[in-house]
Length: 255
Ligand code: UDP
Image (cartoon, rainbow, N blue to C red; front, side, top):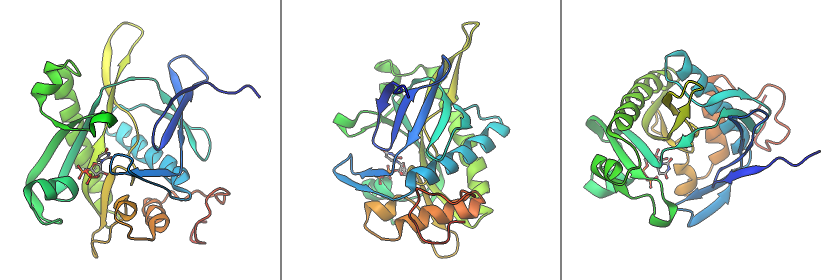
């Protein structure tokens, strides 16, 4: 079988050339990194679960009018996506203080923020993804004012929709990170769409009753039961792989 051409390899995903022009195949690895890749590990079955979880959330978001790169799932670890030009800005939306904002402003983790706070980080591993302002983004030419406006509006819509969706299954959406890309249409029009993934790798998800962490903080902070937490998110979303995930070596809760 002809080897597919690899376009990009990131910390948790690999992108391959897709079957048609303008498409890519996004492959989800089990690799996990934290603290700008200083901590590395494997979360068995994570790629399979994140492929499903991201598929599900992207499809729901498309239904409520948030355009995104997802086309269809191909197999356990791969999905077909639209090729976009990634904007090198990570948009973080926060509802409850945790992680870096708690450290930076000495706010106890779990404190509800007075209002939702949106932050921008420059996507650059060598620099450790520094926090940036709109001035940096426009000044350095990473995105225009209109593009920032589109990203901000979509991020707030994503937050509203996902906060409700997760609360419905007993999970608090504490914060999350999203990335956007430019999609060019045949008529020359350009549209900003949601890209990358939405999964417990880039959201903080807390059980609504117990505040138990159900996300990558279990890996970052060595809390154990990491695989189980990702599975529980998928289970509550009602999307555990049906056919016996042959490459998920997790506990028997998988159907
Ligand atoms: N996040 C991410 N990728 C990054 C940095 C952050 O997906 O490179 C997510 C992270 O999982 C959390 C949110 O963005 O849901 C806010 O992260 P924070 O700034 O608190 O950073 P951290 O505590 O992870 O260093």
